[in-house]
Amino acid sequence: MDCSLKKLLPEYHENMKNPKLASVMSTCPILGKQICLWCCLHICDVADPMKRNRALDNFPDLVKVEEESGRAFDSMWETCSRCHVRV
Image (cartoon, rainbow, N blue to C red; front, side, top):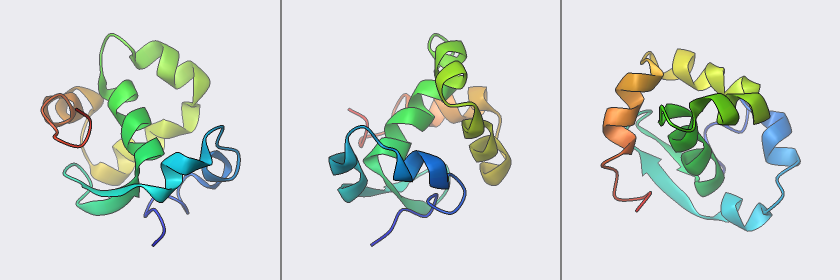
């Protein structure tokens, strides 16, 4: 199974430092789709107000997730902060 964000973020999936994270899949409550753990953890970082600037500096294309989900990062954090996958 492939991550549903693979087409949206192809460079990140091709150049992952830890490709094992791509093999762990879960359903994202924000997107309602299957995504890999790499995307999950990075979406969580960009949604977290305390980590957002650094996360966007390292992975600026993650703003596409905000457009894809139709939710602002602060709204995503309300979900990510309580998500069972992240914990």
